[in-house]
Length: 87
Image (cartoon, rainbow, N blue to C red; front, side, top):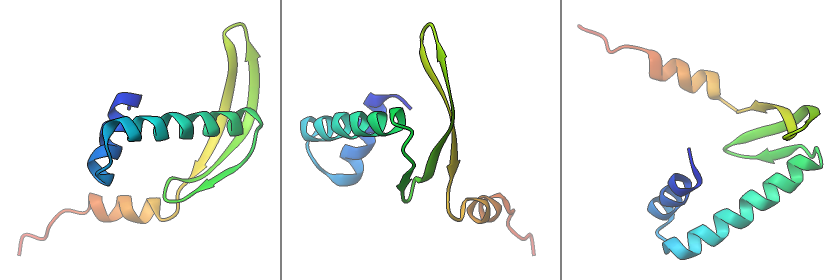
């Protein structure tokens, strides 16, 4: 998902103006980026718990290996994967 798609989804779900949604999304992404750069653990439901497990410095910048745990993710996937009964 690109930022434009995220802004459009926020507008659709919340009903706010696109200009306002863009400012909020930009601010939110900046705060999340700063928190990850500081290796802070994020607990943001319903997204889940995001934890930086490793950081590697490269010529192009930092590479962060993260672990994301979502509550009920396996149960939800199992329910969606079940087929309808053909009684």
